Amino acid sequence: MNKKVVFGLVIVLVVAVAGYFAWRSGPEVMDDGVPVMDAGEPMMDEEEPMTDEEEPMTDEGEQMMDEDKDAVMMNDGEAAPAFSLMSLKGEQVSLEALKGEKVYVKYWASWCSICLAGMEELDELVAEAADFKVYTIVAPDINGEQSKEDFIKWFSSLGYENIEVLFDETGNTQKAYGIRAFPTSAYIGSDGVLVKVAPGHVSNEMVKSFFESIN
Image (cartoon, rainbow, N blue to C red):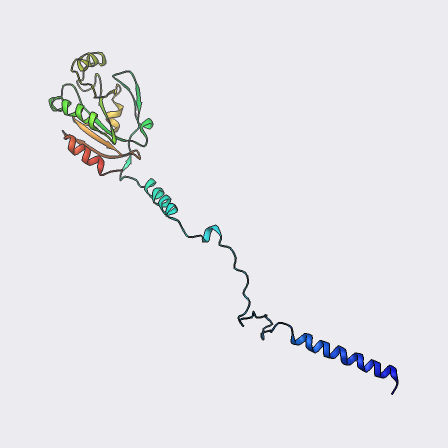
């Protein structure tokens, strides 16, 4: 046999044997072509990191949701009519500036015997009120009330240290709140909602209890 032919056959045989062993030493492959790990389980894609949306909610996150829920809670009723009135002390007081505060407003008159009988109790309420503001409103020269100057002189002589008096000199605030008798109480929530308007005397305990029941 020709030496070149023999040499060629030897080369072919060596290549074939090498290819066979190379194939045997490669990774085992499943029918779908996915290579398997040593344990025989299919190789899985590397787990993707959890996104912000997928992270479990922490206690702090739940608390924030609860606070947001409380923030949107509203009282039943409509917004209290706005007012901006001058006080007996010469200060401008507006309902807008009291936003976020619960407000108790008492409408009264100096000629009202029931109002006068409850003045001392009202003075105590102002001093005791912890979570709401207290204001009183009178309308000088309207419905038999004294003039502003006479009222200031008269009220200053009574010695009440805590009561805040606001002057509704046009009577528009009383009309807006539908006041038809004295005394009349208006209860305004911290959201600015006029929760209740009720005529007649009311005790301090009833006022405080009512404000505890609203937002």
